[in-house]
Image (cartoon, rainbow, N blue to C red; front, side):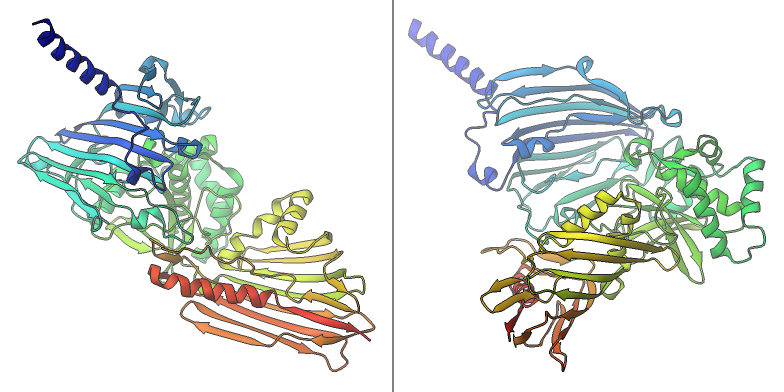
Length: 636
């Protein structure tokens, strides 16, 4: 009889113990640990839309961090502002076998200003806790619940949060009070994902299990382009004190202009007078815009505030004018207000900024898209784009942070999806004209004249702001294939009107060439040697992308050492395919004292299937080999 009672007790004890150790990380399915630095054991988001002006969001995220690289996937904080109240937040940490080792309550979190020291942004705050792991793997459970009146910003859902992260279970649900709050769901990249979708008369739920990690491969498209994702919006919502009814981007732009921006472009009479004085006697609107942009660059500074914390509504222009600082919203709105006072039209533009190009979705208008604000200035049937957060970018140049992507511009008559300036192929130009002398001891000395435009300008023009020490370091990194490089002189010219950067550099280097008996061997291409070959993949999984392309043109005059003749000169070569063109030629002077080297390499923008990768790699491999071609000299 006692045995019969003991068995259920033992079973219940074992069951309780097993539940406690459910986050044991030692027995995770290998499908989930392959290519992963972290495994999301559970990611559950529950959104409840109680009315047009009330929404609660609950999230439970349990992540097993497998190694140091996985730490960045362990979430530890939540931003909030006056319209977002955090009701609960806590963290529980488990060791490798699933034992609880630490519990962090809301009172243990640090509550800090998201923008310390800036009075205009006093409402923007963040709760966070920095956990320092003592061993790997470990599991961290992050829970929070918040309530907000901003129903216009429903959290998007990513079944995968990034490369090298797998997911054991993903669950996303939206419950709504009535048909008027039923969300519109936009599904993206779900074709290869197995998931369950359930709908009732007041809820929509998505669940997926065992999603393997995606390994980042060379030249992979941005994660945003290929990751499975959901976006949600309700047609009738509330945001920052205003109700809205939105079906498309036209509606969205009108509402943002009439509600979020209305009245925020007022300036003091003194500032209006100053702006008008700056453009006195200037009739051309583009020239006026350049003057005002320069004034903003010289008289304000940028502070970083994420749109996700502060919302899409800017601080008023008159306040920014008083304190001389602002975030992207505040500075763009301030510049827009100044332009308005001197008779120049401009449009607030919402963009997803970053090194990877991410487009707004043409047929899905919501407030969750976009993380940055710039200005669009219409002139002669085109747009000039300016980033008001930069104190150094030339007027009309936006670099690689916001180029060539679909954005929403806000007009009084409605929003419009347009594409920002694209720097593509030949636009991204670099020219190197050089002359250098090769000496009998294998050293070289010479001069280079380098010109860059487009995205290549973006990679060079900041040199003018650097110290001499940093400039020399960058040259040595750029020409790392030249041993014992010494920079003897340099001069820069930053033509901000035409957006062209010019570098004139004098240099020398010892042991550039190899000496073997009576022969000297050296690489003709000293200054633009494309010696990087893309990684090889036996079984590539992802497509690849050339985001911008470029054109390089090089012309080098090489003075040969006295007493030597050319024994071997590489052959001219030309390659042409769908990825671009490459040509190189070597021309020996009639007197045998010099060689003229010419090179042209055009790489084209494109999005390609994984099956094309081997062909592309071979193309770059052949270029690298040709760039390293050597001239052989023989002593007379």
